Image (cartoon, rainbow, N blue to C red; front, top):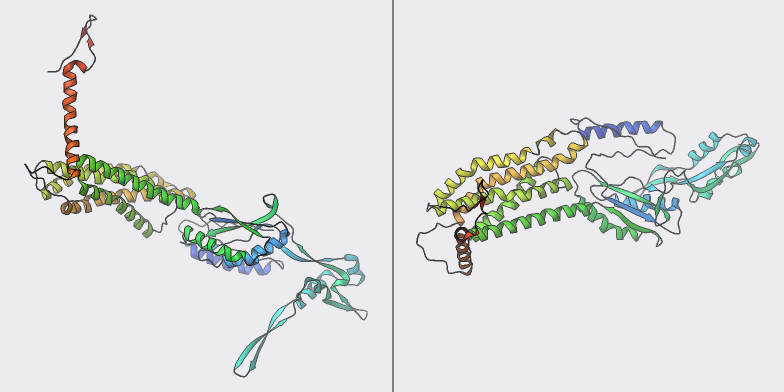
Length: 461
């Protein structure tokens, strides 16, 4: 039988001190509990801690008590050595217990009590240190082992001499290898089994812990009987890997499309490089700030970064486009960069803050909701602020060293990319001429009817 006690700490409480105090108190209380009560397992848990793995254990030949013994002693013990992994006792199955069923009639006929049987078992089923033995230059530890090698030998433990005859446990009780009362049932493919829940703690990486568990499982299987089957039932690292892949994919798509747009409309590969560099740098800056504030890369923070990727290119795109606009006004490169940056500094700041303000109400949340959604909002806000900061600092510097001044009356570019851009720009400039020509030929707006019902076509000047 198991019991779960939840202790809720105040938000400003020191978690390490709280865990240490709870552990100290539980070790004192365990001495007042009945014999056989296991010491408690203290787990530091918050809203973001969920089981990262569930390992199913099943067998078609073994009992639930045998499976429980294998899970707790041969599977759970080696896996618990992995750094950052916490494994509570197995769920399902039945704990193996050596039962001594006392026959009350035989016990009272011998003039004995159940307490005498329990006392005899406790005094004679021990493993005690008895000191050391020095042999030459070596010193050996000596232990007194009076614990029976087999459960059947427990029946040979003497209890008390009655009327000149020694009474043994087998005379008043029956010893059997059984199990405790089962409180939960786990089924795997129609068969009784059990499963182990694995939880990470501290700042351990979910992916790193899961990889270590998967690497150790083949070694653990070699210590088990062939009929015991181990199967991973749930793996949270799949969602973490998917979130990381999503951020990388969204960043690559955003960078590619933005670079293509800059290349098509501005015809400048160097401007494309400048804009593409701003996306990973903004994400990296947000990750650094999150790490400094004690946050980790989890599903929520990665989701926030994925949301911000589509907006990160705005500041850099607007800045580089405005620089090209000032260059087309025949300004010097340095002057064009300074003028372009000053012209969009305030509008870009207002735009960035308008997006960040949307996430401010999340910081007023409390309880588990705050632990879940605050990292998401922080990831978006920090990435947006980093994007604005880089567009005001790094981007002008890169533009100074990578862009070239336009030369009035210069020769046309002879490269393939230059000729393609010139042809595209020429056709784009001709679009307004085609529109005005179509209007002059009668393909303009539909005729307007006068109040008298007469159709009148409006013509431009």
